[in-house]
Figure (cartoon, rainbow, N blue to C red):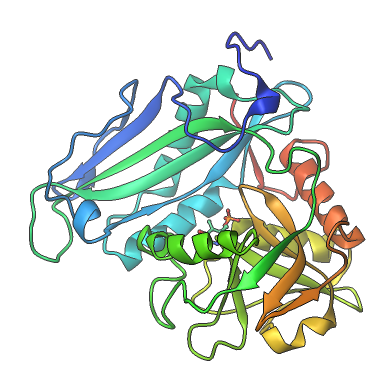
Length: 341
Ligand SMILES: *Cc1c(COP(=O)(O)O)cnc(C)c1O
């Protein structure tokens, strides 16, 4: 765990940081080239790239974790590779083969090993893979060429002073259309979320909750994270809908709730008018793992779950179990971890 770089790991937030190396591969004439590491953090692309005009692009997010013995591991990169296949399919971009995706992530982490934060800081190395349509083009059609790249940066734990609940407000805007691109991790979904997010923050909330775009009666997403609730009889519930982005953290928590915490689990509708059924609720995603939901503001009324200040016991247990696995302190289900060195 010799870290020759001088970074105050405890001060890290979630901001861009230029690490020395990133991976880049190009697709042309029906195939991906070899791919290579580069020190150049800028892209030189055609002004007419489809990624710039028509949103033909997608991205992923995953982390590398330093364990107690100093080794480094990735958490379920195969799941990110597969989700990126779905995103690429949806916006007509070539798939990055799973082994190429994982190899690119491993190359980037190995090349920037000094930037993987030490065990115990709660900080991690965040990886951002992405595919963009590039090359000369003007019509609304798939690009003639594509770039697949992976860069990384050290990020701090989401909650500096320990996990704490925050409040959310239900937005009147939709993040996705009923049969649109909500299930794909494509940039267009996020441009449209910037304004509702800003409005929620201006009103004193952490972010907004999006309801299902067809009926506006069911919870879909919490900002750019998935929703889960723990019912009063200890069942793990998470919404099911074709316009939700399938969170790897969410499916991991669902598995841990069932197999480690021996809870009943189900994916089904979560009605915004029936929040009373939950004793606890949270938002989940790679960045924060779990953000406990203190309360939800809907039609001018704040519905509080467990508490506005204290984390619920099941939420805490789920969080500790998943983080324990990611940092190598709790035994992982088979295939969940990929060693970097
Ligand atoms: C990335 C993302 C998530 C979280 O997915 P993870 O795989 O858990 O990081 C949830 N919702 C949206 C809209 C996302 O973009």
